[in-house]
Picture (cartoon, rainbow, N blue to C red):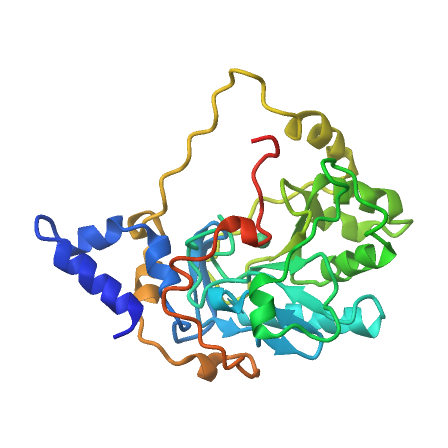
Length: 331
Ligand SMILES: [Zn+2]
């Protein structure tokens, strides 16, 4: 019996005093979605919002491609909308042909059926988000085992919000420009220190900068987000951003957002975990759909042959071992 079914059985069995459906609806959805090992069948469809939704018809990003390696394979988060997989492959190929980077280290995309993750991200739920590590693919390539522990590295000077010029070079900018220039890409999140560097070095052609927005964390990786794809009527778009290169936002980031919180200020209340009851209805069907088998829907790639243990994504490694968006510094 697959893990998800076992989990469901346990939840149903425990629902002695209430309706079983209610018990399922109240279970943290991250436990249910992270237990799914394979995509849901059917046409590709992103359902809901980037931070509250799921994915049908997901495609696998092959763990190894001509110009990329997917990282932390045991997490089973190398799935996305087929357009997302295509965009990753395209960016990697363009960067390699342009001599920018020989290959990309691709971080989390989504779980096979999307949904909330047991650790790490609030978004990445509808198969349209992916992370790229801010370091080129090394030579020789990393083994599957090395990819579990390979350390991420900040491009900021230690303890500052300033890009370290001993690490940074124009190829980092070129890579982000290639990513931002893809038609499907709607937004890219980077640390404010990186955005500042891009603003200073973008040169005259600055159109692509508009898509690149500052956010907390994102100094060991950058986060790429596609717009809702055609055919996903249930996909909720994100609010539009203003025109312009966005460099005028930096003052607020450095002078307000990145400043330590005022002493005595109330810390933000943590949100209760998402449950199926709080998610789009269609996500219950996505969760309950039978497997079609990973390879049948894989985007033309080989599998690593490395079988993740069934508990790997439900009990993922501590968040500190992977590059994920980090909350405000100083906290
Ligand atoms: Zn991300």
